[in-house]
Structures are given as structure tokens and as C-alpha cells.
Length: 148
Ligand SMILES: [Zn+2]
Ligand SMILES: [Zn+2]
Image (cartoon, rainbow, N blue to C red; front, side, top):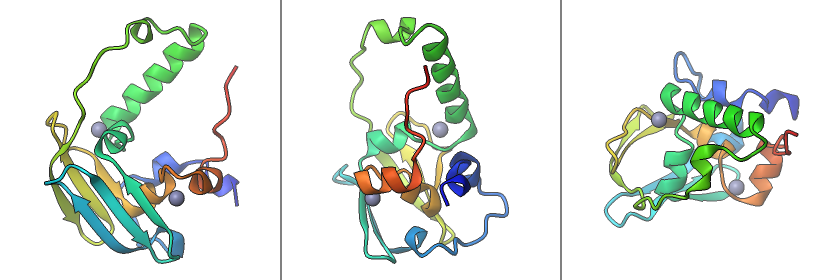
């Protein structure tokens, strides 16, 4: 079971993506609160609810560009022992909000963020896997250990 979740990033790609069979990744109710800036609330078919705020979603944007960025950052951090030059000075960033959100078929939402980034298409499968709660972290991301 755990092994099947290892490639969750890849599974977020949309080409030919089948409707998820996993009941845990099927949304029953989706609320995207763009005007209030509160974020996205999803109620899943198994009764679980997830709340994602926009900065969190922006950080976990599944588009190829952001995937590259994250991988680069991870490489830099691990090759320099965790002290990446860019991490020395924490920059104040304005809180990211969403300008708009669009449903993509019945399997994903596309979000345009306040920094004009709009290439991220969040499949519900991906959203369930990045649910910030502890239970889902254990369930879907068991590999959250330090790489030393
Ligand atoms: Zn992105
Ligand atoms: Zn959860």
C-alpha cells in the first residue's frame, strides 16, 4: 500500500488521468473561497474534510515549473547541508491569495494565484495526498523523513 503512493507527484499529471477509484480521493463537496481568501475546503467521500489555504496550495503547485523549482531547492539544501544561500535571509513575502479558480472537468481545480501563477491544476487525487492534516500525512506521505 505504501509503495503505491511513492509516485504521487507523477500521479498528479492530468494527461489521460482516470477518475480516481479510491473513495478517499473522491470529493463529495468542494468549496473554493476565492473572495474571502480563505482557501479551499473539500469534503471527501469517506467523510474526511480537508482545508487548504492558498499559500499552501501555491507551495504545493503541481505544475512542471514548480516541480522543477522544488527539486532544485531540495538538491541545493541537501548538497550544502541544509544551509542554502537563499535560506539565509528569510524574505517577507505577501500572503498569496487566489484571483480565480476554475473547475477542470470533475476531477480537478485550476487556480490562478495573486502572483499571476495559473498553470497549477490540482486534481482531487493530488489534493487528498497533500491534505495538511496529520492522518493524511501518515497515510499518503510516509516518506517524510530526513535525507541525511
Ligand atoms: Zn506551478
Ligand atoms: Zn486529511
